Length: 512
Image (cartoon, rainbow, N blue to C red; front, side, top):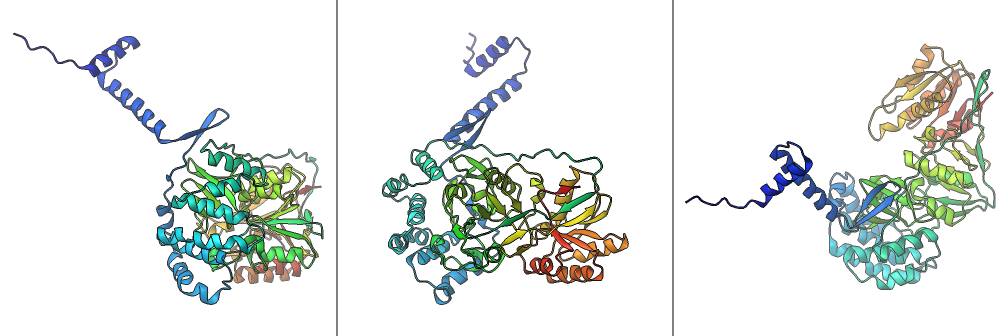
C-alpha cells in the first residue's frame, strides 16, 4: 500500500502562484518573494506612525529608538566635564538657584548613565518654578524629564497646552495625542542674476545691517548666554545678566555697543528624529530644518526617544520658530551647515536679517530670495555689521584657500565654497590652494608667486593673522576676503586696521 503524501500548504501556494503568474518561476525565487513580503510586513509594524509628505512618507516613532549610548561613547571631553561638574561646579560657579542644581544633576546623570541621579533632578526643577518670572522653560523641562523617567505628565500637559506660541501649541497637541508630526524639508531658492555682458568689476562687501534702539535681536543660547562645554550651565536663559565674551557672544556685544537694542534668548526648541536626521520646526509647527546630530546630542537636551527639547540652541536651523514668534528683526547664530543657510534664507524671505559669523556655507545663499539681509563674517563698528567693500577686476587672478581636513580643519575650505558658488554665476580667474590648518601663509606665498593681489582666506590662529597682516602691510593693493573668521579675535582687528584692503563674502555681490 502506498504511503500518502504529506500535505504541503506552502508547496501548494507556490504552485498556485506560479500558475497565476503564468510563468516558469523556479521554486527558490518564489521563496525569496515570500520572504521579502514577510520582511516588509515586519518592518511596517516597527513604526508607530507614518507622516505623509507630498508623495512620499517619513517614518517616526515615539519610543526609544535612537542610540544615545553610541552617540556618547566617543565623546572625548566627557571625563573632564564629569569631574568638573561633579567636584568643582558648586565651588567655583555662581550656584544661586535650584535651576542651576537641576541642570548639574541632569547633566551628570545623563553622561554617567545614572538614571536615578538624572531623574531626581526634577526635584530641583520643581523648586525652581518660583525663582523666575518666565516659567515656560521650567514646565517644558519637567514635562520632557517626566517622559524620560516615566513620571506622570498630566499636570504639565494642561499648562503647555495654553502656551502662547503657535509652533509649540501645534507640536504639543500632536505630542500629547501621540499623533503624526508633519515633516516638509525646506529648499533653498535663488534669484536669477541679470549681469551685463560688459561688466568689468565685482564689488564684495557693500551689504550691511544697522542696529539701533528699536532693533530686536534673537540669539542662539550656546556661546552667547550659556556654554555647557565651557562649564556654563548655571544661567536660566530668559534671566541672563551677562553675554559670553567670545564666539557669537563677542559679535553680539560689538554689534549692540551700548545702545538699547532688545536681546531675546531663543531657547527650548523641539526637534524630532526621522530617517537618520533631526529636524526643527517653522513657525507653524512643521518640521523643516535639519539640526546636526551633535547638537541633538547635547547633554543638556531633555529627550524622550526620538524627540528632544534643546535648551542650548546652536545654529540658525533651531531658531526659526522662536524668531518669528518674537517678531525679531535680527537673528544671530551659527551658519556652518547647509540647512543653517536654508533656515537663514527662510527668515530673510520673511524680512528678518540674519548674522552668522561662522559662515562656512555662505556661498549657498549668494543672491538668495528675500528682503532680509544675510551676513557672515563681517566688520562690526558703530552699530553697523558689514559695509566694507572692495573691488575686484573680473579678469583679476584670485588665490583661494581650500582644505580637505576633518573637523576642526574643515572650516578652511570656506573660501573655496564661496568662490565655487560665485563661479556658477560668473566666470572667475581663480586658483585654489589646498592647505592644512594654520597654513594661510601658503595661500599668501602662492599669491606672491603668481603676482596676485587678491586672496580669499580663513583666519583662525595667530600665525594666520600675522601672516596676513604682514602681506597687507607690504602693498596697499593687496586685498583679502575673510571667511569663517568672525568667531575669533583676529578678524575684527584686521577689518579695523585695513578697512580698504579687507572685506567679506557678500551674499549680494554687485557686478558693474
